[in-house]
Length: 385
Image (cartoon, rainbow, N blue to C red; front, side, top):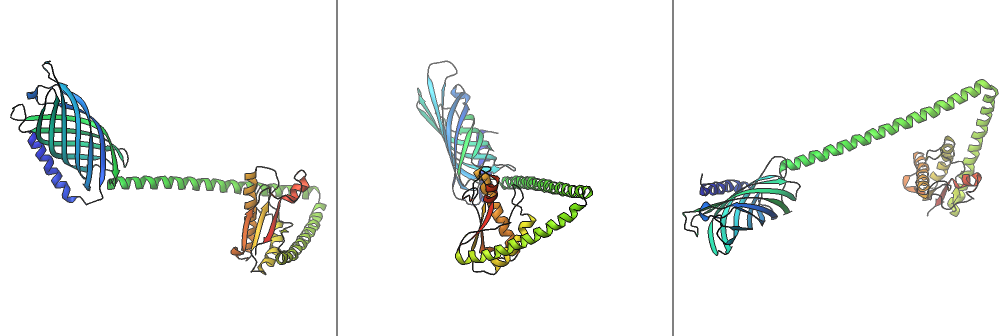
């Protein structure tokens, strides 16, 4: 097949691809490449390497108008003196045909070439050019490109019947604007994102399950230890049961009295807008979980707060100075939120309560003693309106 036939075939391929292309906003392609040129034998030029650049404008989906130019310095193969610059300037219509599930393209193009010869030779040729290329997409806007080019000159300056030059080139492409990916690549990207999301979801679920099992195991261990201790104490000293019952009755009575006192103090707090420390509201060590005694005190508190639906109340959590400021801030906020959740479960409107963590700030006693630190670990109520 002659060079003219190759170029004609390229034009037919582009004509077949262009009607199916949907119009899009313009996109641009900028290329830099190295090139190797095999000159027509009638010229007697040495085949040499050069470099050049390309600008492409996509005026329709997968169809671009491309212009490129390159510079190659050569000389006569016979060894006679003289250096020549070969500067081909090409304009073509190129179809960029999608390849599979990637940003890659098969490129078919055909158009016009103006060949300039400079330095010791000042001549120009005009002819037709054809291109077959492959663009390997690295991302949506970056690709590697390699092209094979044939330039057909029907009436060359050297008097031959025609000249046919062959060029091979490779370089990098930058794609700007709304350059479209293949539908397969969009689907592949979507599947990859979905797989990553599913893997992350499974990881989080496994972590949550592990944490839940650890908490359950710890709670079971704590429960068994308490039961075993109670059983051992019961066997060792039968009188302990009576003592425990008496202590439990006293504790229940103390909690009831504390709750009643808190209820009266809440009434005064609501009327005078003074802070109220919730006596008896305690938590498990280094946790935001309310103790059973604390929930009983809060039952009385909840009744009093529900009786004043117009009052907006802040629940403030405080800690002692043991530990970092950031840790105590988180712990105090978590404990204030735990009190708020319990009161909401008792029927207090959620929008009536605000939980705030103050950490180890605003101590009411010295942190140098255990008694002082116990007083600083507290929950306070404050009316906001």
